[in-house]
Image 1: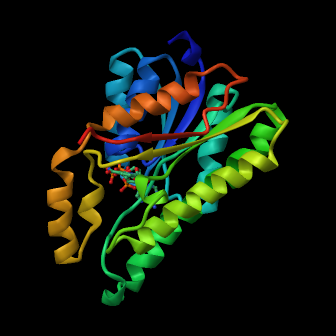
Image 2: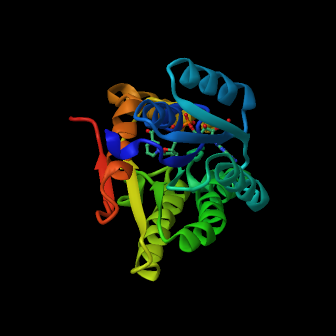
Length: 243
Ligand SMILES: NC(=O)c1ccc[n+]([C@@H]2O[C@H](COP(=O)([O-])OP(=O)(O)OC[C@H]3O[C@@H](n4cnc5c(N)ncnc54)[C@H](OP(=O)(O)O)[C@@H]3O)[C@@H](O)[C@H]2O)c1
């Protein structure tokens, strides 16, 4: 897809799962990827693999709950590659549990990573995109942004928030050349369920994940949205396994 050649794309949460698959595919299509997550050794291994295949990647250790770190990765993209075409706000956690289990620290972590992380991506990227007159946020939500299920109330709340933030920003930046895409995966192979500490929720999830899509299925959707011409804004994509 020539449309991606030379584009500069930041991917958060690129050390595993959907983020890793997305970074690989974007680089394969000719984009410069700037990859962030907390596990630096995983990012380094991914960047090495991308470069071996002739792709271009820069690495930045990143905790999306820290605004200053999100600004650092945006600065790296600009200083290394001279522009910023898109930020894929993908980093997320999903420690499911019933509310009555009162796993308050886990609720807060979901709010911090899944909501504040996306807001920090916007806070760091938006001024740059406004100055450029172009840019795109691809915010990874979930089918949990459209329906709630038991043990997932807080997780779904964070994804409803991502939906609202994405739609709100789209309306506010109308006419400024900035594109907003919400990508909502159904069950997908990744490390996401490993953050679940509640025994019952973990068991339920094992059954649910038997039909999981490969992460490359979601990566293809993200590559599609970024690869569209500048006057095309792909607003929402929901990708689920066939049942
Ligand atoms: N897999 C599914 O079934 C599914 C379905 C719907 C939506 N999603 C969404 O897809 C996105 C990606 O998840 P995944 O399924 O690919 O799971 P994953 O394999 O667990 O990937 C999550 C990524 O987020 C990163 N991350 C976690 N906390 C972070 C933080 N504070 N700062 C920076 N990075 C952080 C992790 O890297 P480090 O630990 O190295 O920081 C990892 O790279 C999430 O937003 C998730 O909610 C997934």
